[in-house]
Length: 452
Image (cartoon, rainbow, N blue to C red; front, top):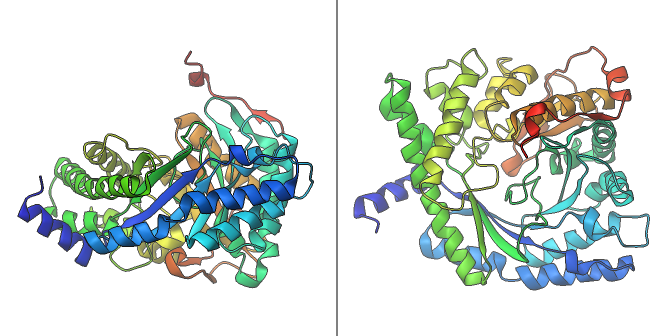
């Protein structure tokens, strides 16, 4: 039972500290849509998504109005399309993305994820067709998001897939050059991808999930930032405890919305993802939380330690508020989507190397980073390989969402608008990784993967 004081506290968090439900994401299995005829398959995909998710947006809006809780996005995730389309007699997988896009527009959602392939140990013909289609698919759709899982702790890293995805990222940037390579903002390459992630661009509905499910992603960097202002100069024990208590309150609200949406949509409740997802708005930044701990600027020495504390405390506080915590659940550091990260990158305090170190202790990885348009495919592949290695060895989810902005160079800015913000173009190392990436094959799984 909530007390009057707790209700007032939550209202302050919403009104003054940018607390929101970042997304209600409905996961939908499309396995039943498989058909040898690609046109029939696409029609089944469209019909099933529209049937399952027809009330998703109005239900989210009703909950938002009744509870006074901002729900920023309503989204859909589907079974990886490479699995659904595998039995189709076609070489062209772009129509599947276009079917997803039509369904997203009919349902009124912000994004639809699942134009995906899982290739951590090898590639099927369906995987190859989907990966080959990604640049055109993302260029000819508005709301479709794509992901490819190239590694895992159990399987190692598929370096053939890593090499190919570097080329795919480059082609996607060039195919969407009129929007500064915006297609790459809808493409993420994973290691250890999870099946219940509600956040884009990496959301897909795993084969171990139910027919349909409701997953909720909460946010609230601004709330944590304000909470830490009350413990200035105090020991890290106090800082951790403050973050834990704040994460509990944030997650409790997410649990409430998830249960309500599940009931009203007659769809099983999946998980609450308690990730701290920032926005470009002032006061809603993970970087500013780290600076509030005592760092002059995000990216300076001590940043990785501060982020480790934050990530751990968020998880510990969140799991006490919900029995079904999942997804990624931690602190996100997407450069273009975080006002403090943008400022630190522009000042030169936050570099690609420092971001890579930070990803060892937080959620996801090198996210929403713009690099010069002339960055080679091999360099992009090497960046993906480095991040996948961190995920593989540390048994955590890591990812790369990188934008080689055509015609842009270091010091320029890529404007994407909305929650995607703006990304300062960051330098990459000039030493070539061409021969390294050309080797192909598979980097073996680490010894600690042998747990059976």
